[in-house]
Length: 160
Image (cartoon, rainbow, N blue to C red; front, side, top):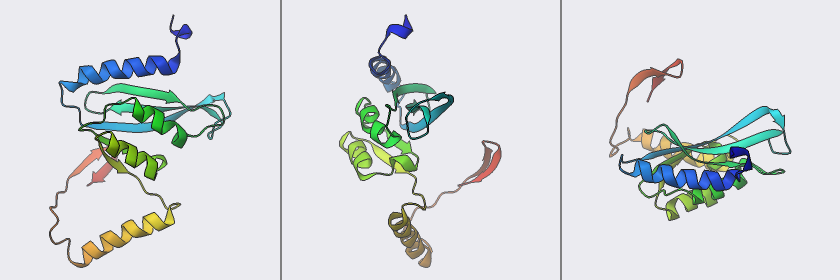
């Protein structure tokens, strides 16, 4: 039966259902990430079948997913996936693929906040972020509320 369903239509309905089910729990964190199936050759940026998923972290459920179309890229798939989600009150985390003006503007329009990664290949933006932290460090982060934690996770020591 599932083979006959349109995967994107199913993902939309499933995502809406899960959003409604999670609303009562105070969902706050949605993690967006792409995954590749290396043994499935396709004409995508990874050279194989690639999906972009939205994961409700606290609830440990998939909120939505989109397949990257033939000839496509994860960046071009993000707007469609985000558009299917209720982001009001959510903090959306995305790796460097989501560090695009259009993506963060869409998240804000839909009522969400965001945390994105900046990599070295985005040199101007990376340098600007480093400069902000350098200036704050020069004054010992005066006026900034500070919090830190130590722990272990994902097989490594973590300091935050």
